[in-house]
Length: 242
Image (cartoon, rainbow, N blue to C red; front, side):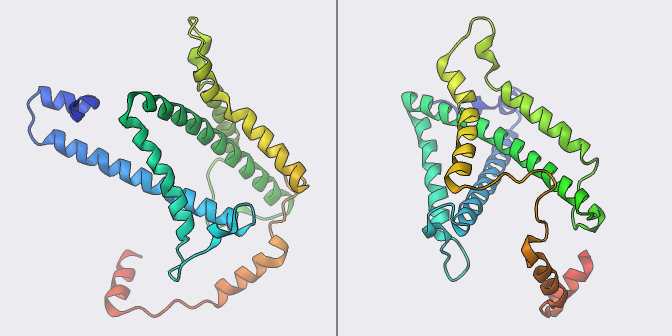
């Protein structure tokens, strides 16, 4: 069995220098980071799947919550994909895991690209409908130029994911497919959904930011909502950190 310390250059250097205790501390910090990242990804996937189910774009079972408001079935479905990590235990199956990692990386980049494009549509809608960005609770700096930069760079990085297959005669069909397969898949899925559901593309500036009057109801609720009374200790802590 390989020494797990051999997988980290930082830990290797500490072991070589004979620094006791620090390699274990670094490994513990790395594990904490991995768990934090995994928790974030699982949470995001659960909320996404639950939201899709609520909107009728995923099986209705994933919209069900227990009495604590937790979408149990969405959590189970998200955690089930974690079992794919066990593919790393075998030499042959580890190759399959590498394919999945490549596909997921490409999916992430396309997701970021779509997010920035959506923001640019939102920004255009704010400008056309005369809504000042300063009235928003959160707003980014250097917009929309930062968004233009992000959309260009994300697009370029997506195209460079499998650049190694185009240089030095290192053509590999598997690497090419895992790096770029998601691009046509995304385009086909987008067109299929528009045709199948007969929905129209919301052009920049045309989005209904009032949500058909729902926003006014939300604003009224937030205006009339009263914070629950806090105990002495919680109230003191709240006033201390404000």
